[in-house]
Image (cartoon, rainbow, N blue to C red):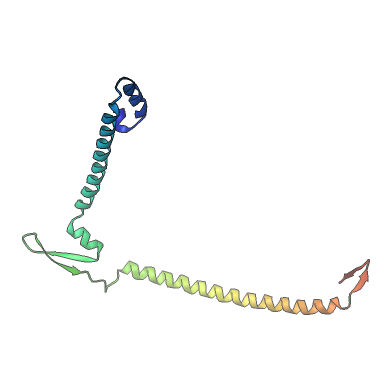
Length: 144
């Protein structure tokens, strides 16, 4: 079991190799065989999972529908129609449109606020530049 799981197999090999110098052939063969069997088991599980998907499930993944005859044999694939959206989808679209309208109105309000604040700052800069020309020196610095 230790050899199959490859858990500390080198300790087992060292004990066996001390007695039989040719034992490396057996160890390499066993490890290679066990690893290939393990990989094949994983591949088998994946293939089995893919096989479980029926043709109908595969068709649904691609937006198709399987038409079956009365004897149960698939006869043809047809594209499913998506012209009629579900009512929940329409309702969700309306909710998103309302949210978008609200976001747009908030954005417009913020743009107006930024414009007003920018104008106030420009006016304040003009007033401060006229005050700085009339500043008086005090201890080597100009004060407003």
